[in-house]
Image (cartoon, rainbow, N blue to C red):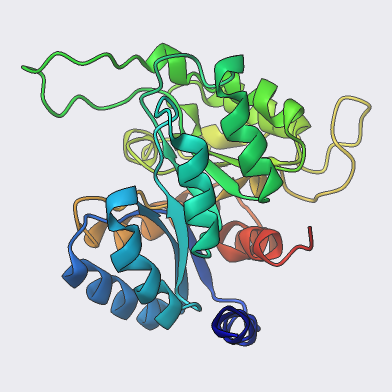
Length: 286
């Protein structure tokens, strides 16, 4: 009965689409951060996909249940964890809708070793956020087995094709493999990218560059997908807030808006980028 009441409450609350859906927010483990996050989201009429570690699941799931119009749970599993599939089931049972941000695999993302993980994610119709491209190195003095090559954006092409009922989001547009990211997204309807991180900072003097990346807007050809007025709709909004730094939410919004304006992206397409696309996916029937 409790699950049913919770489901009904969520369904009722999600009746109205927010103006913004941030597909990439990391919980830093501090309960005070959650309170600050919700206040900021309410002020912006926004929702966030909240990346949550397994150790924080029990404390976070109740908070998410209190604010279903503002928070959507994502489980931050490790692909190489022997218990990864069980963790997915645990997050799904708690009402979480996705996984991520996946990062630091010991093999390429599309290695068949990870098939049980992605099969379970697809079974639960989970959205999966992947780190793609260059990755930071916060502790250079400590040895670590981390490789950007294993997180190449090209690996998502194979995964998107093998798991057509799973929605994939590649974080950071494959930085710096932007052309690869866009071309892969062009032919995979279940694959999207966010532009969080350093890309919109380093490209701020040349935002029209992205018109060459998302080049097929309005192009009718056997070499382009049918439908969709703007190729930019293969992107979704993501701030990559981490460490409790909520200022990045506003900074990312400003960068996105400047880039989309510079590229002449229509108001209708921007509405999908900032919320509409992810809203439809969240509310789609299995």
